[in-house]
Figure: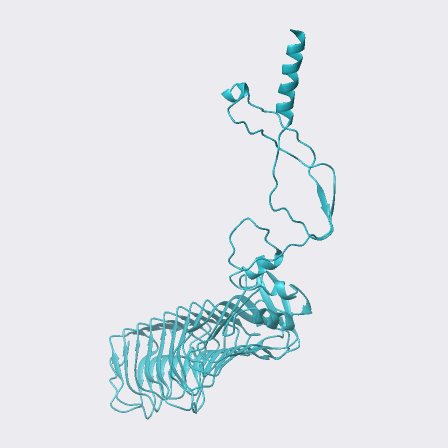
Length: 462
């Protein structure tokens, strides 16, 4: 009897110890080592043919040992982008799978020490031709030269994206220009978002962002500059000696949305944004919204061969002039709308020297400094000025006017404005004609001064 029991015990021991575990497709390349012991969790597999498979046997204790510590740099093959399985994801696979290639995967330096020009163009080359994307994480990226990129034949586009204004800062240390995008075919576009473009140049770097289109109008593809700050690298406001001569220069590029952009001058110099074309190519469909132009010589300049600009929900603070169309601007200028914005400047809030057909100025809040005007229109044929609130800025009333129509201003309708606290609410200068003053609330020293011809004077006094 004792012998039979020992034979049975031996059979049971053999069955419990003869477990087989399979490891499939394990491959490690390179040289590595480990110290300590691995952690294993082992649960036997039972086939239901033994007494302990009935549920009475449930192993609950597992051997737990220290995890291995690896040294060295094991390598593995890089799978093609788009593979979705349980193979190893190498650093190259992760980089290739990003929606927008990062400059950090191509030699970028985010400490503000090393030049990132070569890294930028290496990153751009990682995208398909004509479909370029370059992303920047948080950090400061130094550039010793301008980032000049030319879109290939249309349709083509480039996207330059950071992690946020003043979270990602591109500093152009030894260059008078920043980001220059050139398109030589219609239908090409550029997109610059979520970063700060700073200059280290004293007395004005040339331009922070330049969008240039050289071809004649044909197809339109929308470009955008969104959530971008342009300033000197020695200030975050209107101090310091560094600033861009032009924060944004739109040079013949059509269809550009500028939204949530902040441009700082140095307290009275520089242009926030200038729109211009050339004799062949107009810059048209320029939309500016929810933006701030602070401490500049001029906030926005509507120059030669520009058409179709809208400005809305924006602030012009501490500029000399908020918005300007300079005298002698060439081409057929048309379709200008300025609305729902605030102007507090040291000179005129809005100054239009060259005819812009179809001008509409409405629902703005304008503060007038001494010896200047809220709205000055020297030469424009046809337009409306309505719903604006115009008041003195509190420094005095000497030489102040709410609205002035100059010698070339004709057939304007001035209606529903509230003007108060300035010396003259509305002035028609000699040569102005066929302008109408209708339903305005005027509370000035002199309500209307009419030195023109065939103008509707409205009420003569308050």
